[in-house]
Image (cartoon, rainbow, N blue to C red; front, side, top):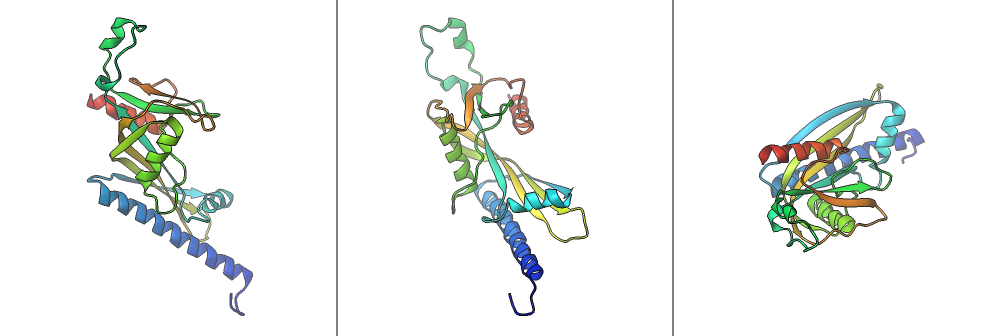
Length: 215
């Protein structure tokens, strides 16, 4: 801060810098996905927020300059499950439908896609997502593509200038190895579903519907 600057000027300068870092980080993440996969569908949404709501969203970007979430739609070939135990009825052997990995978080009442969480420094979006799936469920998977990237832009509903950008990334992945081993500090449960459960988050429901349409 120079001798002519006021604390308000300094605060505004810090805010502008955070916004630039935020925009740069979002653009870099989208670009890295586009470099790794053939198709990266991006949906852009814009929202006007009250000053208090905008301040909360803006605060989430401080420190790293990024606020976002990446979850994984993990599928498993139903014909590749282990052989049935002799304690299981024979009719169960005929169910070779593909399965989808879903999780139920602590305090949640809807099944959701695994993943989420902030990435480590220099970790790719897909690297973070794969690591988080394994930490939460014990399952190792391989990302095969990007289902959708939702790029949300938030603006204050006042004359003030500024914007905050966030990403919600939906990755597609295939089961690699492992058995369910739930991290109970984060989840109540995890399971493989052939059909969507009754209570399912909108993002997971949309991905599940697309899977059933393809079968």
